[in-house]
Length: 186
Image 1: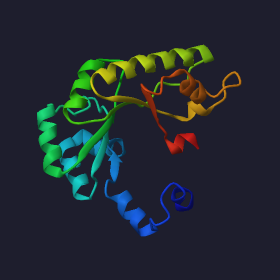
Image 2 (image 1 turned 180 degrees about the vertical axis):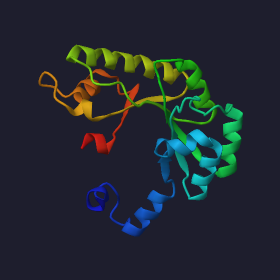
Image 3 (image 1 turned 30 degrees about the vertical axis):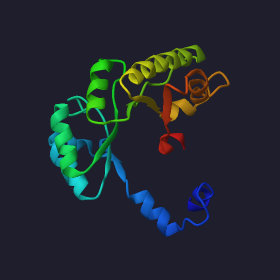
């Protein structure tokens, strides 16, 4: 893996320096500890910070993208533990402006659609792309970016096309990014 990645960096960057730089901002997707987050979100985030995590990507665990905290409370927690809240998975088709205001207030850069389900036709995927463009335009007004987190269904052929290709072709790259999930892509 480093051999491929090293091609993108200057030759004087050693593997040791690369590892140090990479780990300086090591993060975690909070969904990977969803049970703990449901029991005690703030306590779980404190523990994760204690393990050295410096960035979080959240999710809406039923209490909103800030798990019932006000933005000011979340900011205090993040400041206390020295963690940046980079992004959150969210239902971007419901109460988008309110979620965007909360995300911006805690310094997030992205709201991410984590799942849409397989569509039945190329035209349905094009409609999804249109919706993604709309979401991206709304988030841009809040100073945020939009991304879509793929699952395996975007890599299953449909009428001779990959849905992932359709999404990439019919979304505006100024409004829509993609969070590539390696597991689902594989």
